[in-house]
Image (cartoon, rainbow, N blue to C red):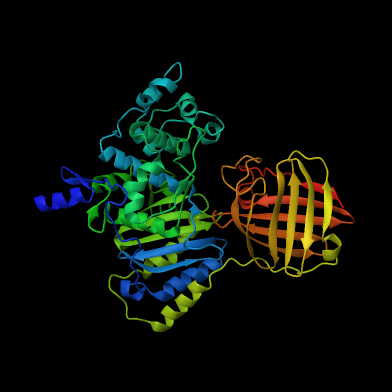
Length: 524
């Protein structure tokens, strides 16, 4: 490296070490391009018609897309958001967060704070069990990264009930030799976050901000924390869809961003190549969950790899096609979403630019401008509309402490109000159309890791309401900074009402995530 280049990098806040570049970006020291360049699909060798067909296939499926960004040759060739979702809003990532946690460790390894062969117990001498088993003593950071710590079952659900998650994780029996078997375990990712904070003095969010988020122009990220203030690591990160696309593009470019080595190329190679078998090898031809696991990335079919999160949060990197696809969605069938990508988008990527096709390009742009989640069309009114309007229903004693519910009906909206020992709460719903608002309704927003019922969180919502029949009023509430929605069903009989709640997480995972809000019965 030339002396001139070293001086430039030093002045820009970038330290050099050996053959690589170590990322050190003090705030304000260096400005990279904040947005990705755009191009027509055809100019980058992709047919607009193929993207249209992909969108049409989504409409005919059970998948609910919220936003996507498709990159080819470093250019955005197509992107869209289904209203009420928007490009400027964060969205929950679930386990897509894991790929960012491993990236944070990559920076820490590059800067000499730890090694992947370090023993996990070495970081937490004050939180070890009285007796440290041979298997626990053998567990390394690499075993955390590859989901092969040796637990017989996923420890996460039990771990998050504790006050000290590190101590709880270390207390679990390690029945198998670390490295011997793959077992998906979000607790292992939390431990990576805890080790990062232990060795750097920074949370994962603080650590990534100057090294990754600032150079890539990622702003406004938030990340959940454990009771000790450590970022959860395996889940809880919230970013915009384009942020995922930038992240994927950085990996596609082997850690380079605008010509600068942001993340060491050696780490990118190490983090995205096969480390341990997951799934059944005999399913490899049909399953993207049987291709092998890396460092908090999954190998995928067609020689690709991805970060992914529950219900369809994806950063899919396709090196052979020089393409990246970022997706935010809610689906009960994550494999089905990837199948549509392989069916429609993968074969559409050609090696050479295609002739312009103004008709198809215009049709695609029109389609993208009109993407929306449309509430179900139900009866706008019932004979009960005015009977219940302005009336308060006193609710029978219940474990959620709800005292009353109330309905206020106009020609265009229905306001649902509720009072409990926690306060008064409401949802303002348009009739057969979404109405924008906020709510602090207890038990919301829906989440795979349900928040305590009595922890009140302000959530942005779009809500609609309509009559399923003359006696049944249904509210649909879309929490549009999450992957999820809520259904509230109100059944009237005489002067009585029964109110039931079902969030989309509990609906998709009925045996795994219990709805915390109990049915309510009340009288006018």
